[in-house]
Image (cartoon, rainbow, N blue to C red; front, side, top):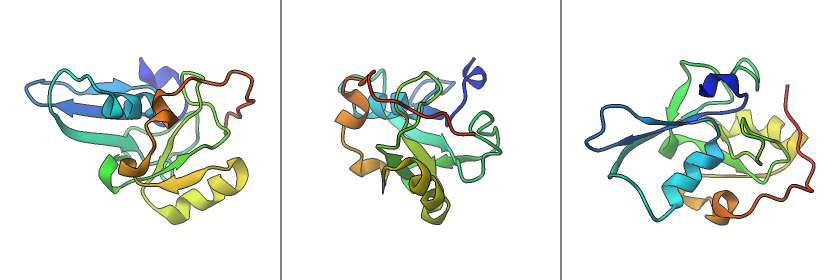
Length: 132
């Protein structure tokens, strides 16, 4: 159950599949999208708008936004729901700035996220925060 894990969530809708694939971490969603293998054509991608989330622990159930409309923080010192460095989505760049000020990272659209930000190895020696 992805709701058991804090941080932003994602979903990918595939042609011919009645239910979306859900991801407990946006980093995992980005890895799936940027990876070479998929079960079918992607028809839609949604992510949690962390600017509308009540907290990191409770990212919300009704604040899904199309990933192509989101801005993503890449390189922040935060752990996602599965403990790996997270890629954090926001609907508005202005909502992302306080997060960047506190945790670092760079803001970019989904298309500009480098594949190695999601597909590269996880540096376990890098300390990560869990935002409140």
